[in-house]
Amino acid sequence: MIHKTIDVIIIGGGVLGCAIARSLAAQRRTVVLLEKEPDVGLHASGRNSGIVHSGFHQEPGSLAARLCVEGHHAIRKYAESRRIPYAQVGTYVVASDESQVSVLEGLKGRGDRNGVQDLQLIPVSHAKKNEASIHGHTALYSPTGAIIDSRGLTKALADDATRSGAQIQYWQEVVDIQEREDAVHVFTLDGQYTSEIVVNCAGLQANRLAHVLGVGNEYFMIPLRGIYFTITRSGPPLTQSIIYPIQDFSSPFLGVHITPTVHGSVLVGPSAVPDFEQESYQRRHRRFGAMARLASRQAVWKSVFRNRKLLRLAWKHDSHILTQQYFWKEACKVVEGLHLEDLSLGSRVGITPQLIRSDGEFVNDLVVESTARSIHVLNMVEPGMTCALSFAKWLTDRMQGAGQGAKFKTPSLASVS
Image 1 (cartoon, rainbow, N blue to C red):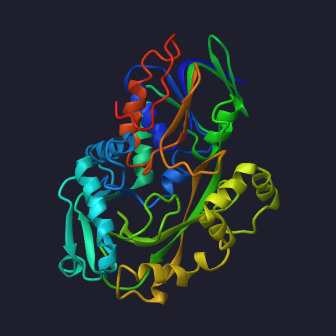
Image 2 (tube, rainbow, N blue to C red):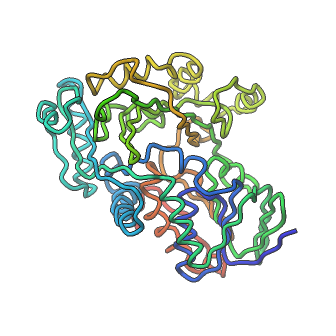
Image 3 (cartoon, rainbow, N blue to C red):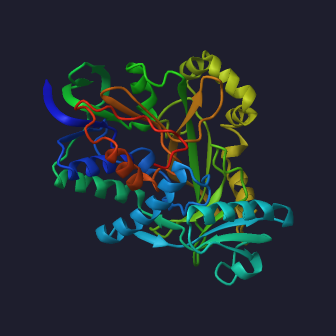
């Protein structure tokens, strides 16, 4: 039986948990990070496309906008100092025709107000000087768009945390949390840990663990499974830059885009659809037990009626939305010269948690809830990896004294303070 008493327990060894551990350890607090896997970054943090976003999607004045822009700069500096594979490749958002140009103008306006540097609206004919394959009418170009080795980032943060004194305990799946007036007890399959305060940033498991303490009962989570195809044709890469089509950027369902990686490949994807199971990285038949549990919740049906796209995508989960032809057609909206046979199904599969309120509405903003001795990151601002360093600083700055008589203040979603 393991029994430890420390200042802060962090649950979850993704990029966010590791960033928070690093920040707290630098404050000389005793920190233990509990990870149920044999290493950090084995779930969403190591399975994304590695895009470091510029910050032109977020609502101006919001905390999400601030964290994204600050996080972008912080990751660039951190990657340089730690020699993590990183490249500033630029981002294009492409309007197929003149009717979509107003969307790009709106995105540029957002980005300008958020402080994103050097945004430009350019004809695609001009963009072709740098990206010969790009296809469309007009593009919003952000030269600061970048890519990074996301798993490498997570592991570097974990290494920094341990060098500052934090402990990372692997194979420690949390099964229960009990909060008392003087301490909080965290139980794993192997033992018990006791601390002044616990930070729950367990990603796909965060909502379940919060419910143990009666927190966030108005929310539930649906896993969204995303797959990627890889461009495997011979010759130089199809693109050196990140290329997006016009899409509903407020939707939690990611559209197909084209992304180079720091390892030299080019990804097409993802297409995220409800999977009904957590961590189902292998394609397989749905388990009816998981479907039945979700279907028994009234909020699921409210969400279906409020968000018909959820039902359509769930129905298509094992059909054409995950086929090679679907990805090829979507990619051809923004690039030319790509052939169907150029795509091969990649091994990269990610599961993203999508939070839904009890009234059936999707939650697309930061959700952090707390008790006297627990903080629960139920919904990280999108994009989570880009915001990891800035969010960790924002959170840990507000944890000063938490668990020692001062209560962590649950944030206002619109607050930038």
